[in-house]
Image (cartoon, rainbow, N blue to C red; front, top):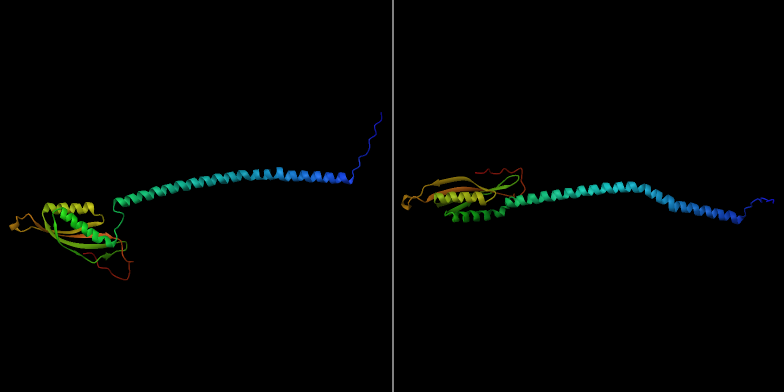
Length: 198
């Protein structure tokens, strides 16, 4: 049996069909294969960048927590020592506390004379001269209480004389100066010379 091989002839329909098939194949390759391959190639660098950002965020959170703890510790320390320098208008409260401490110690305050405040670059100092009377034990107790209870205030000058023999000699005449540190009330004028402390 003789088989005859016929030549294959392509018509216009075949050419159009082949072109369509080729176009579909190229489209499938572009959409389903090349796109994901390209995205997959960028995925590794995106993951590496994400890891770096995560590490930076963790470091920033750790630093924020450290700063918050340090701030809280500083706030506690300030609260323990009175919250920082008092304002200048709080000097009257200090004077009230001194007279209350003196009364609790049995010391009578006869007079108190505040001097004009002395301005320094970072604070103000107010000196107050006190005069009073009481027992030596009461005086000692008062000075100790001033030291323990009043932050940013200290006794700078002190004088004591014995009392009258007619009263039994138990009462002493007392004079002392208290220096109170407070915040500055006005900006420092470099052209003005300030009086020194007494």
